[in-house]
Image (cartoon, rainbow, N blue to C red; front, side, top):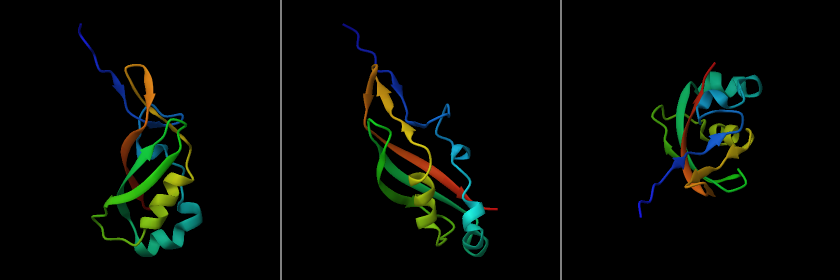
Amino acid sequence: MILKTIIAIAAIHGSTNAKSDSLPPLHTIREENIRSDGPANITIQFIVHLNGQITDLAIVANPDQSNLDALAKKALLEGPSWVPATQNGYTVVSYQRQVVMLGL
């Protein structure tokens, strides 16, 4: 028997992939923070659950050493829910890494 593994990674609802341009713009409410501490590209790792909820957010890279970690996490938490990953036709819990770009 040949077993094929077909995996589709988690993505933001309404998006064909998990690109950061699918996240809602936060600059309108946090412009002063981004202007003083940005721009920043912050990589966050998190878990996407079966219902699209994300948990266990952790900063894995902040090359600009900005103070915008909390705002990057907020962008993901307040953004749209995620479409969970699939493997062999089954919905699965998965880790996801996302770069959040904060700038004006």
